[in-house]
Amino acid sequence: MRRLLIPLLTALALPTAVNAEVKENPYQKGSLMFYITRSYNRLNAGDYSGALADYDIVIENKEIYKKVFDGLEEFDKFYMQRGNAKSNLGDHSGALSDFNKALSLNRSNPLIYYNRGLAWFKLKNATKGCKDFRKASSLGDTYSDKIVEKYCM
Image (cartoon, rainbow, N blue to C red; front, side):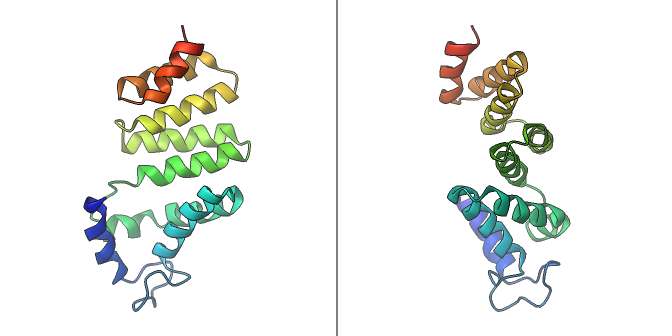
């Protein structure tokens, strides 16, 4: 968390391409930080359509994020969370696409494999789902251990 806090605070003072005039309050509507924060809040509140729209804006502004945060560290989470929003809206194939993009940025996050495994199961592909749950388990995800025990033996 602390690793993200310093670049985040730095980003607060910078204008974004979403709205280049936002300097005093980077969380003002129209700023990149506004959409990052709101997308997370909407996803947690169960507003999957709203979260999806906000994640689209954040991902469209990937280059701004990259510039502000000196790279794409942690950006995998936006793809993963957008995938979760898509999955909750029934778009499991679209979710798989986002989970794959997330994995292209970070192959060591067990939650991405876990979520992709769920999407595979929803698409009735237990073989690929179990493969992802095993990978998540090998990366330390204990929820995946239980799924592997119950469905993948």
